[in-house]
Image (tube, rainbow, N blue to C red):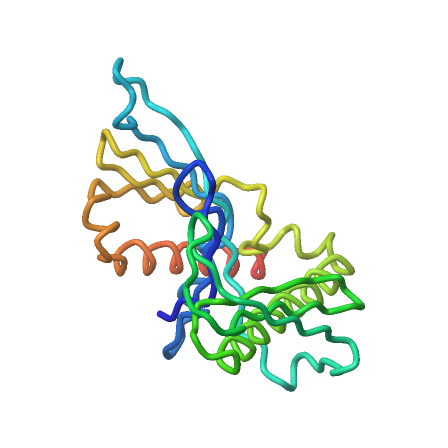
Length: 212
């Protein structure tokens, strides 16, 4: 796992985190994680013990290869600037942060995780290519919407696909009808039982729809 970019929320925590997962079959195992993940917990600041519900949207995109997305250099505007940390604290004194703007789509990608401008530019291009590939995929899917809506794994962001219940140490995947009482272990990285179970259930649904 390699961090690509992140942005902090002024009220605490992260507003957005983007990272790259590499390895054999990485996308095949993780693609069913796309959607809205609902969290039920009792915050430390909650004196009466009430459960609060929040959500995080997850998008899982295949890394775009050069053959998938061709970007004309003339369609790009590359800006460089100095990286800065929380509260305006300087991270380094060189113009290493990169902002890439794709003019035809209006997409803007920023990267300042690396001290090298070259590395930040390469990471920003990876994210930009993946987002453009996602837009193209959505366009193709829209053309076949009536067919695709019947299939599982479209990655629509509006669906609440899973609930993480901290008081009950429970995680429930609503699409695959899987409930595990080991949320603490899963958050520590014990993902195999959950990912394998969801993938098997989702693929079984697709096969039954094809046969039907």
